[in-house]
Each structure stands twice: as structure tokens, then as C-alpha cells.
Length: 148
Image 1 (cartoon, rainbow, N blue to C red):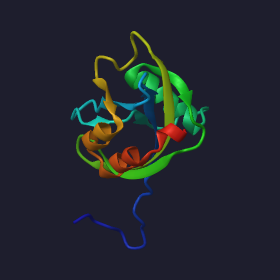
Image 2 (cartoon, helix red, strand yellow):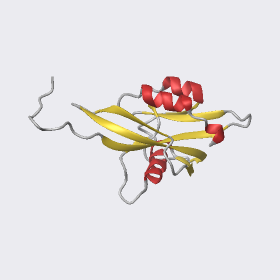
Image 3 (cartoon, rainbow, N blue to C red):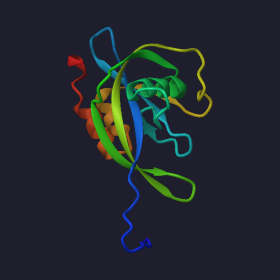
Image 4 (cartoon, rainbow, N blue to C red):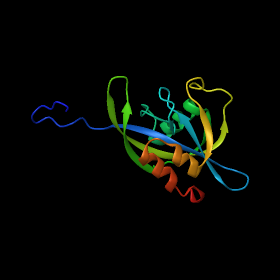
């Protein structure tokens, strides 16, 4: 059981931003790109910490470029939010993530985290099933991207 100090409240969750990268196939089907985490190789969407000087959607687009080499049009309004426990070496951090849709136009030939992560396109249903975080999987499964 964690120690608490009388009158001291638990730490507020840390804010993160994320992109849900998608593309439309020639047959009209939607695909979602997932990336693996660096340490445990679980499938997730590109996400990270806010970046000073960038709006949330701009930081989400930057994360998608750094983690998967993706360039495209990012939505300015969040399409979902979820909370999860981020795994660190010796502890966990509670994080609240704001998600933005990224319609991918291209993938760069090289990108900063290319050697640290795998990335792959999946159908929307498969992406939702493969994501380890239940709340994120539910958001991906429920997106009406065709209307986006």
C-alpha cells in the first residue's frame, strides 16, 4: 500500500498528446498505423509529452513523424481522451492522453526513432484489437473515420 501524507492529494495525471494515423485504401477501407513501444514492444499509437511552443495537435503530428516517419493533415480538435499508467523502470506515472486524427499523406524514408520501434498498417478493427490499452482500443474501434 502506498504511503500518503495527511492532507496531501495524489499527484495530478501528466498530460500527453497522441496521433491516430490513418489512410484510405483504394477500395475505400480505412487503415490505422500502430507503432510499438520502445521497451515492451506493445502496439500503440504515436504519443508523447506536450512540446513547448506547439499546440496539442501540432505536437501530436510531430510525435507521428518522430515515431513512424508520418506526414499528413492533423485534426485540430481531439477525437478522444483516455487515461493509462505509463511504465517506467521502477514506477508508473498516471497519464491523460488527448488524441488527434492524422490523415497520412506520406511516410518518410527515414525518421528519428526508426531503429527503436516497429510500425505497421492494420485494418481499424485489427488495430483496436491489438492495442494493449483497453480505453485506447475502444476509441480506435469506435472512430467514424469515413466522416472525418
